[in-house]
Length: 130
Image 1 (cartoon, rainbow, N blue to C red):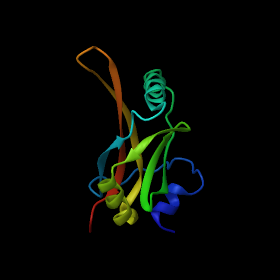
Image 2: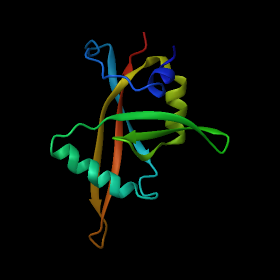
Image 3: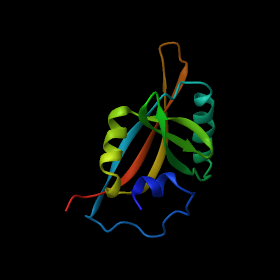
Image 4: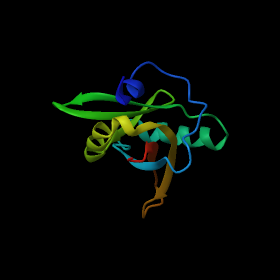
């Protein structure tokens, strides 16, 4: 079974084991499309939930967008955005090396009018090349 099948398949319990030190690394992916629809509201809620100690359950789902492969990020049931196109290519070409999701973070910044905007990143555990 390929990793995409593992990641996109039925919901699994988080792995209790951690990768061996030196055998893997963390790769951070920015989430695109975070301002689309109600995603800012979702990210605000997820940030508050994480700050209060609640768990954020993250999964990635592959789908077809205008004939191209795409990967959406689902956090606690909310569609919060997608991986960038070049990151989709990386994930698909390295799917056997992806061990799992390490973390999901929500950041914030203020524009010149002091309006807050939220962004998100997902961290994947990637096995080092042999």
